[in-house]
Image 1 (cartoon, helix red, strand yellow):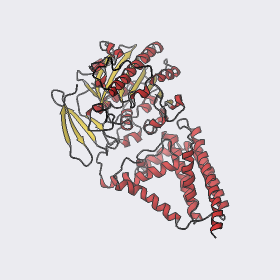
Image 2: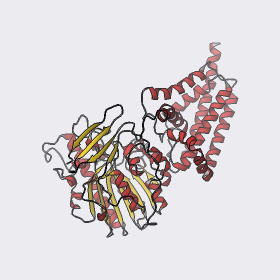
Image 3: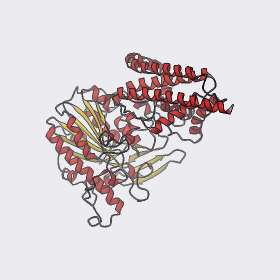
Image 4: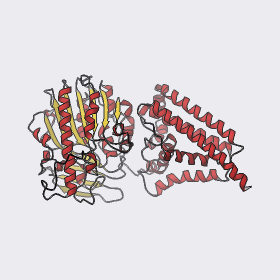
Amino acid sequence: MIYDKLKKIKYNIILAIIISILFISIEQFYRIYNDILIPTISLRGFAEQFFFHLLVISIVNLRVIISSYFLMSLFTWFQFVHFSYYGTWIFPTEYLLFFVEFKETYLTFSSVIHLSFFPLLLVIVLFLLSFFFIKRFNSRRIKIQYLGYIILIFLIFLPIRIYINDDYGKWSNPNYEYSPVANTITTLSNLFGNVIPKKISGKSGLEQEIVDTPDIIEKNPNINLIVIMGESSHRDFMSLYGYDLKTTPFLDNKKEDRNFIYKKAISSGVMTSVSIPSFFNMLEKPDSTPQIFSHNTCLFKMAKNNGFNTYFYSSQAREQLKEIKNFLCTKNIDILEDGTSYTNDVSKSALDETLLERINAVDFTKNNFLVLNFRASHTPYLNFIPTDFRPFNKENSIGKDEYIIDYINSIAYTDSVIEKLIQKIEKKSEKPTYIIFTSDHATSLEDKNRSGHGILENSSVYKVPFFLYSLNTKKNYSSHFEEFEYISHYQISHLIANILGYKSSYNKFNKKEDYFVTGNDLTGIGGYIQLYFDENNNIEQKNMMKEKKKKKFTFRDK
C-alpha cells in the first residue's frame, strides 16, 4: 500500500514539473512580447512554482483542481491585459475599483479590447494544455485527503495575518519580477487584509479626490526638458547651499548665472517608493493612490500626449526599481532602461556617468522629456562612485568622520556627472532646453550608526536640492519664482507640467504654503508630515503618525 503510494508520487512530480514549465513558458513568452517587462527565469522561481503546483495537483477532487487552474488562467489573463494597457501588474485597490467603477472600467476595456486578444490566446493555450495533462495523469497521481482544505485555510490566513499584524504595507504593491499568479495571491491578500478593512472602517481617512489632467496651453512646445532625479542627495552637504567644503564646485560657479535658479527643496516622501511616484504623478498629500491609477497627472503621459518623446534612464539596478516602475505609467515611456541594462546583473547598479552614454540615443532636434535617475549617495556610499574618485580624505577633511567623507565624495561625484551632462547637452541641443535637478529624498547623517532614510520624524531626510537651468532661451522662468527660499516636490512637478505646455494653478512655483511629506507608504498609513512656515520662514512641523499623538516641532533650516 505504502509502496504503491510512493510509486504514484513520481506522477505528481512529473505533472507538477510539466505544469510549472507551462506557466513559466507562457509568462516568459509574454515578457518577451511586452516591451517593458524583462524575462526572468531563476532556479528559485521555478522551485516556488513547482511546489505550489505539486500541492494543487495533489488535491483529491479533480473538479477542484480544474476549477483552480481555470481561476489561475483567468487571473493570468487579467494581469496580462492590465499590463498591456497600464504597464503594471494589478494593484490591490484596483480589484475594488473594478466593482466600484464597473461602468467606467467596462467602457475603458471596450475601447482597448484589442489588447486582450494576444493574452487571451496565450491563456487559452495555457489552460487547455494544463487541462489535458491533468486529465491524463489523473488516474495515476496520488491524492492527499483534506489537502484542498489545508490550501484554502492557508490562503485565508494570508490576509488575516496582514490584518492582525497591522502590516498594511505587506504586498501593497505588485512586484515586477513575480509571476502573475504570485502577484494575484499577494495583492488579493492585501486587498482582503488591508484595503477592504480600511474602506469599511474608514481607518485611513486620507483618500484624496481624483483631479483631471490640466489643460494644454501650448501645443507641442519646441523644447527639451531633462529631469535629473538624484538619490539620497542631502542639500546641507552641498557647498551650493553653504557646506564648509567645496563639494559642488560646478554648481557653485552657476550661482550668479541668471539662467540658474536654485532653492531649498522639500521631498514628498522619505523613501524612493513614495517620493518618486508622488513626484511624477503630481501628488500633494496622501492618500492619492487613486490619482496614480487614473494616470491623469502622470508626467510621462502628459508629455507623450503633448508631442514629446519620453525616456527614463536609470543607473539603479532592476531589483531596486521593481516597485516604482508600477507608478510611472510606463506605457507612455518610449525607452525605459535601468542599471541592469548596462551591468547585466539584476542586483547591480551602474555608475551614474554611464547615463551620459545612454543619451547618445536621444535626438535633441525633436521634443524630448528625458528623466535621468541617479544612484550615487545611497548607502554604501563608495559602492556607487568610481574607485579613483576620492576628492575628499582625512587629510583635507579634518574633523570629518569617515562616513561623512564617504558621503561628500558621493555628492562631489554627482556634481561632476551633472557638469559633464550639461556640457554634453550644450553641444547636442540647439533648441530651448530646461534642466531640472532634485532628489528623491535625502539621508540622515547625524549618527553614523543610524544613517539612512525612511525615518519620517527626522527632518534631514526631506532636505533635498533643486535647481532649474535654462539653455538657448530667454524664457528662464525667473519671473515665476518668489524670493522665498523653499520649494516642494509637488510644486516642482507643477513647474515641469507647465514647461511641458500645461496650465498650472501656480503663478509663482515656490509659493509659501503648507508642504506635505509622506512616510513609508503612499497611502499615508505609515504617517505623514505637514510643514508650514511662520512669518520668519521658520518651519513648523506636525507629525501625523499612526497610533501616536501629533507632535509639533519648530526649527530654522540652515
